[in-house]
Image (cartoon, rainbow, N blue to C red; front, side, top):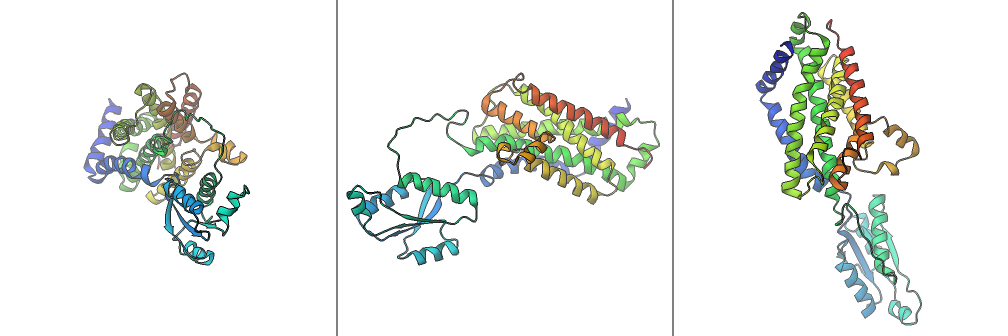
Length: 353
């Protein structure tokens, strides 16, 4: 009965706050609408400046092949290499291709024709991929290779990012809101009224978690619906697997938020510590870059990151169609995190503030 009244209090506080309900709805909508387009690592429309010193049919065919590629956009045709470098320095071009005189003659004599490629490598990934794409056009292979892309046949980066963005939305809302809620009650003074009642630490902590379980499931369903309507991305298997993993994961991030709030005296302190933790978790979860590409010491640290396991679950279910049996190891690890953090949250709550 006491737990029921505490949960009712949480929803009344949420209802009185005119900003939070709007944030809970608008944040996932904006994340799903904007981030898949903005946070993309697809390298397309590289700006290329071509210096054609040969002006032969062969060099013109090469220019047309480059223009036809979806990876390149011909922006300039400078007369000299020096003018091309000025375009790179002004950020008007990403790559310079210089075709020397005698290009067609070298090809006609059966000798490999040389070209000069200069790449703006401020962004190392963009520079290396751009030069690789251009090398494939300049030196086409005679061997015919059939390639089959599994799980993402169209190489659509959004298919990779959308499940991860759902995870990020859950982390931000179900992690920050419980943390700021408790600290807010400390600053207002309402928590002192609860401290003089016979409410147990278990009931108080559980009353803070249950509302954000419900909010988390509301937000998750909103994200799933937007992913289907806008991008046509749906889970390969039943939603039950995602719901089960989400049930455990929300307990993890909400428990972490409560722990931070129990040890924080002010809103600013809780926000800073929570943001620090979330930033580390997100960057080391495999959201943007594969964990296998990280240094060995960083890969070892990711095993202590609960976000890593839920990110793997979401992508396995959405892209591979994995069942509960396939994600059991990640699910058990999340369960261990949830149990440990929830017990810590109960223990760290002190009724004598």
